[in-house]
Length: 148
Image (cartoon, rainbow, N blue to C red):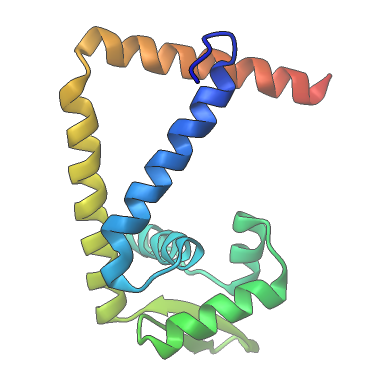
């Protein structure tokens, strides 16, 4: 049932549909949502020439150390990530994408871009501008409410 008095409910419903489509389109890659997000984070940070350590993932994704460790171990077993020692601190291990990890992330990006193109094709330029204006307006108000 659609009710225009509940825009956030509609946004949540849209988000669920989006995630179902993403999971369906990415299922052959064998990546869970959090694995894919961490892979993406490592990819974009490496593109900027920045090193990534486990602690940064804990903070970025707001999850416990043990959870990050589990995800990294799975990504290592899949051959997508490796840990490399840091000469200045033997305790720290930099997280680095393997060639296979880079290829997997590039596949993810290609598929995401196709989905974004599909959505953009159904919206006019004006609808897209209005969409983003509304989203930003809601986001600003929610952030204000968070600080109230």
